[in-house]
Image (cartoon, rainbow, N blue to C red; front, side, top):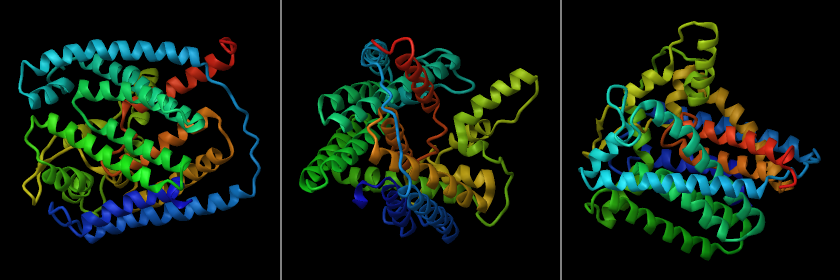
Length: 394
């Protein structure tokens, strides 16, 4: 069905929210026709690439080996991550009760000039984002995949536990939000005829997000404001900020892939820089500075950090950005969507859910600029080799 097709969901998700932003439904301000055309260009090229690749792959037969993953190793890892997050949550709670909640939100991360009250140095913060957040991403995709393969709800609960603790520690909502909508997608793909139950689950998810927002705001948000500001507005802020920041008629300094590849390019270039003792200008340094600035929208809301993945595409290749990345992403998404239909290989299903997460996240920020995703792929590789070599019989 179309509603369970990775490409269709990806295109529809971006198109709906971009169109609502274009018609200023949330009252945050208009976006230019150039920005809307830029996004439509990406969606059209992505759709062509996805459909062409999908047509070609239908004629191919895949013989995907069912490579195992050691459940015992994953369970040990799960206990380790949960224990660490639980202890960190105690520290976070003590800090929250000793300062204004928004001060905690800002100071928990720290910045280039101020250390984190939660982690101390920025080095510790980066290590946490790679090793712990990366571990949470690995575990959530693992348990989502186990649910997808077995249909057992206990896997969803286990996957949600780490995500919930991580959200509490950083006082964020995005990871739990992504987890809920990915679960709804997975449930609908497993039960395509049970639309009513999927609808009920969606309503429950919205209510959970409302209560999370209510707590995060200190009790200052009613439900109607939540729907307008956090449901519609939250999904369209990125386009308003992007419209504020960029002039799509003027050629800017190009970064040739470094911006869109985010954390992946940063760590690769950092190793390259140290190995050859050269100086490299990093896009992430510029992006971090820009995204700390608050912008007052037409609705009076202040927003920052949300610049969507299209900001980085523009910075990389100007108007060629949506064409280049539309082709590349279309092919990758089509390949893994096809593999997920013919195989229950857990590594493939995990990557499938990762791509789905990227689809949902790209209207908010560049998901590749997430250190945790680097950690996720590292853990994927580590567990693959541990499970299929020395520890194969565990």
